[in-house]
Length: 170
Image (cartoon, rainbow, N blue to C red; front, top):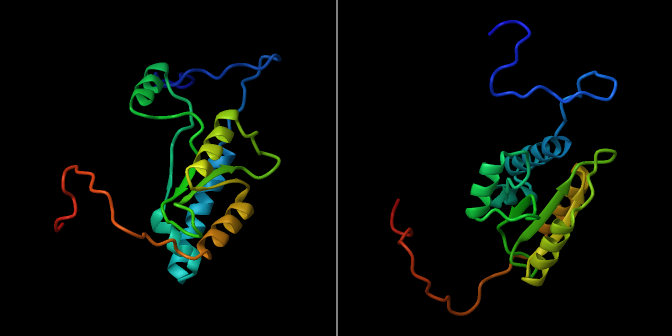
C-alpha cells in the first residue's frame, strides 16, 4: 500500500466545516460493557453470588453501522430495533430473566431510544425484569441485586414442543 492511500475497504472520513478530518468515533458504551462482562467473570472466579450470572448473560449485537444490504439481511433473520443490550437467562425473584439496556456513564450517555423504551416495557409485560443501567457502577449494582434474588423454580408439567432432539449425550 502506498503511503497516504487508504485501504480499499475504508472510506475517507468526512471533513468538518473547517476542512479538518473528523475524529474516529469512540464506542464508550461498548468499552464499558466489555469491562462489565470482564468484572462478572472475575466475580465468578472469586465465587461471588453475582458471578453465577456470567454463564447465563449474553449481549445482543443489534447496534453498529452496517451496509443497507447487511441490515436488510439481519432484519429478515429476526433482528429487531430496540432489543436490550444484555440478557440474563436466569429466572429469579419471580421474573423469567433480566433484560438490561446498558448506557455509557456520563458524559457519554446516549438517550434511550423510543424503540428501546418500548422493548423494556414489552419485556416487563411478558414477565421479565427490565432495567435501564446508566454506567458501569449502576450495571454492577443491578446485577448484584438480581443475583441476590431467590431463584424462580419451574412448577407443574412442561409443555412438549418437539424439535430436533438435543438432550441426548454429547
